[in-house]
Image (spheres, one colour):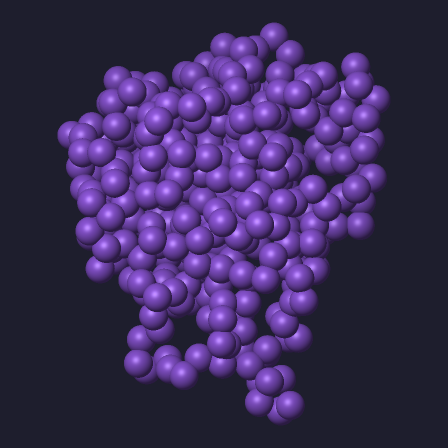
Length: 333
């Protein structure tokens, strides 16, 4: 077991934040070769959701971390529309619609929309929220993203994504580190940190939310795409009843071949995530972890009681079921 406050160097604070996990209705199905070098035979497709998060501070500030994918795929900038045309990605609803249908959160209550990164299954449609909500993006993102389409015919986001609203690019030149991540204390009270986690995309950010004074939810974004990237590990080995594992190393530590990825940076981010995942006081939720779908409570319910409800223990090794076919093929070979 990892000692959260010392080994991960999370500053102590009495301030907590409410976390609600939103099932954004985004569904992604695509070849793993889009992300992973040399996918395992029998496990060569990624089928997954894309989670969003509603975060509320003790002072009533409300933010969204990621928006899933926009419902209207035809409105993508042409460059992106062409790039994803062959991929099976869709969303039944925009996150704004999900909030409105529930009725407990008014759209004009949202103060910030934080994008873990600019990819279409995360940035959603910010234009569905009032312009009073700022758009928060990671380091280097402004130069890459702005101006959007159609002002820039080759734009990778839309002008409407940011038109009329403040766009704030996060700086991690704060001197603060949590674990091995450069960090930024978003509210200045120790309740919610943004973490510099590049590699998958320029400016990619994860986050750490304090759900009780001593427990946390790690919002992983696309720091990794599958829990096989971060477990088993030296800190969190397979239990005896699951040994020996048919895999000598976690299969996702082989790097990414998707255009635009920085493979060494991506693998460094994964390595930095491992100690958080190994901590009994941190529940890591990566954006595309479909194994959580029937384990955790979704919006409008809170996720703060994750530890007492045993979500981490229940879900920890569920990802191994994805490898059943691959293991069978290995046995045959």
